[in-house]
Length: 94
Image (cartoon, rainbow, N blue to C red; front, side, top):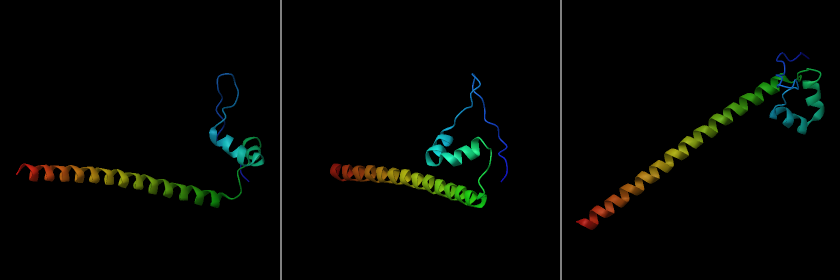
């Protein structure tokens, strides 16, 4: 197992900064947090972690695309509604 290279940033009073991801890791498995934070040992399953990151990246792209399509759908429904109202109003006038 290799050592983690990035040092923890310190806040003003010299205490280490605790990130939300560390709290999440600790709540999931305090031993894994201790090994990574205190002993500076990276997990041995790096290939699985890389695949997980890639899967999360793909999922994020899919969610963003779905959000865009939903927005486009709302715009089209709004435009269609306005067109329908304008058409009905036109026929009512004539």
